[in-house]
Amino acid sequence: MDSSMKRRDFLKSATLAGAAAFVGNSVPGLSEVQARANSVVRPVVIASANGLKATARAMELIQQGVDALDAVIAGVNIVEDDPKDNSVGFGGLPNEDGVVELDSSVMHGPSGRGGAVASLRNIKNPSKVAKVVMERSDHVLLVGEGALRFAVSHGFKEENLLTEESREIWLKWKETLSNQDDRLPPHDINSIDIGEGPKKYERITGTINCDGVDLKGNISGVTTTSGLAFKIPGRVGDSPILGAGLYVDNEVGAAGSTGRGEANLLACSSVMIVEYMRQGKTPEESCLLACTRIAQQTKERRLLDDKGRPNFNVNFYAINKSGVYGSAAIWSGPKFAVNTGEKESRLENCTYLYKREKK
Ligand code: GLY
Image (cartoon, rainbow, N blue to C red; front, top):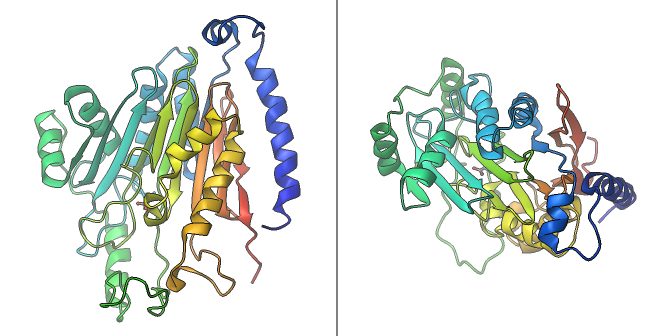
C-alpha cells in the first residue's frame, strides 16, 4: 500500500463526521429499530462517474417520495438510453460478433428481493427487465433467449442497439485484431505464466452502478452494463450477479461495482462490502478491503504488472443505512458521482490501493 493511506485516514474521519450528522437523535436504551425510526434519514444516491445525471434524477425522485429502487432505475435509464455512453444500454459496445448483449441486476432492500438479466439482446433497458424478473417471476436471473422472450412477453420493444458509432469502433477492433483475443491456449491451470494478455487495444468495461437511500431510510441498488467490449458471445460479467456486481441489505447498506467483472466474480465483493459494513466499517474502508482482496487473489502473470499488482481496475461504491457513502478502486484515477440532496450531483475522487504513476 502507498501514501494514499494518509488521504484515506482523512476521508475516514470526514466520513465518520458526516455519519454523526446524518444519524441524528438515536436514544440510548431504545431498541435498534426504534432508534432508527427516531433518527433523521438523510437520503443519498451514489454512482459510478458516468452517473452524474442518474444520481441527480434519482435524488429528485427520492425527494418526491419515490421508493429508492424506482428512483435509481429511472436514473440509470438515462445512461442506458444515451447512445453516447458506449458502456451501457443503447450504443453499448458489442460482443466479438458485433451484437450488443446487456447485463443488469436490481435489488430492493425493504422486500429483500432481487432480479437480474444477462446476455440480453435487443432491449435497451435491461434494468427495467431485471425489475420485472424480480416482480413477476419466481426467479432471480434470466439469461439470453429466455430473458428476451420474457421481456417481450411483458411488452418490451425489440430494437437494434448497435449505433453507427459503436459499429465503427467494433469494426476497427476486428480489423486490428492479431492473435490477441480472450481465448487462451491449452495450458496447465497451475501455471502462472502463459504469456502476455491482450494489450493492443483498450477494452472498455464501463458500467453504471447506482445505489440510493430514500426518505424512509430504505436502500436499493441497480447495476447495468453492456459488459466487456468485444467479449466472447455469452460472456457474463459481475453486473447481473447478486453478491458480485450488486448487493443490498436494508438493515446495513448497499454496494456495487464497475471494472473487470472477471476479478469481481471470483471475489463476490459486493456482498463482502455489505458484510464489512455490518461489522462497523465505513463504506470507504469496506470498498478498499474488497480491492485488497482482489489484489491478493490475482496470481496469473498475464493479469499482473511488473511489481505484481493487478494490471486492471475494479471500482466499488457503497452507502450505509445512515447515508454515509464511500468508494474505492484498485488504481487511482476514477471518480464517483454522488448526490446528498442538491439539484446537481458532484464527482468525488475514489480512494485507492495503488497510485497510478504518471507516464
Ligand atoms: N463490470 C462489468 C463487467 O465486467 O461486465
